[in-house]
View 1 (cartoon, rainbow, N blue to C red):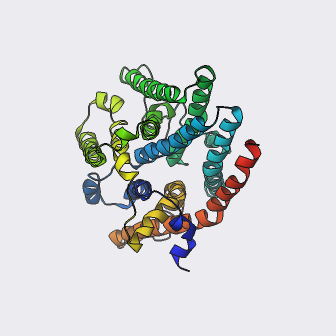
View 2 (cartoon, rainbow, N blue to C red; view 1 turned 135 degrees about the horizontal axis):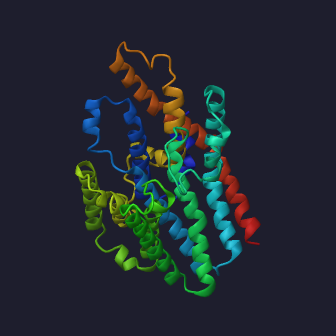
View 3 (tube, rainbow, N blue to C red; view 1 turned 60 degrees about the vertical axis):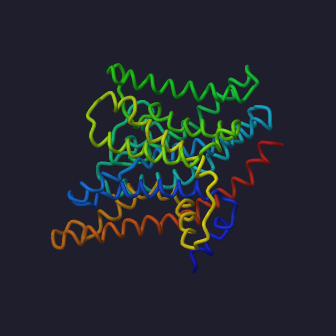
Length: 372
């Protein structure tokens, strides 16, 4: 069956191609980074020059899209618990079912094949506590740290905004205050990390919330200050790319703790923010091959969830030829090709038969149940 036919609805919908492009690049960077497991040392020496932070792209893009949704809702309807609940239902129908599907799959696989596995050691993943106050790589589902950041953002930031709107009725001012407050708070916590007063990790919820807030700031400017949003988007785009180059250069050459604490997690998000004015207005060129940008963007969430812990660490690593010393380089090439092929193919299946139907169910129930 034609792959374009399977995604006909997505390809014919009113999607923003530039944002699809950014999301597709983000997931390709993430999967590529996790796939460097198959690289030789020589290949790694070259790859590190292009190992950009795909997760920051996701954070900023998510903040921008969610920010636009929240601002539109708050400008068109009075803040209420029903409105907040409807927001949560729509968000969590989009993110939680597929997350728990993969989490449950990994739990079952570990229970069957890992004799040292205990459910108590992975309970934190079911509550998104894996990096709330402490982060330790335990090999179970390490890539889920970024999903935890997003889920806590969905929970806490709207509550803060809606609570402040109870006292201050102007969404424009409240949202700007929340943006400045959270970015400043994260910066202060990094300062405490630099002083060794608190344990600093770039993968804690509190130390990465600012990346999403940069996206919300983009939504703020997009909605309230269109004049500035449309002012020199190409110049901002080039500046954003330059910041990514600076981030890569400094990260590769710097051993300064000050940089790690203050700036390492901020340069890429700010660079991504500067890309948005250009990309948010970028139209899709009339080339059929670019349909794959939309397809990869559409299945990016499933790709993120399965590429590492499930595909790489459970499927590829356990192939019978993986440990062979014969034709070692050829085995790595075969495994790397399978890694990409299985990740994309399985993600398409998950999206078409699970993620997409769940999203359709969300669209049917959320508005009717909570806005009557």
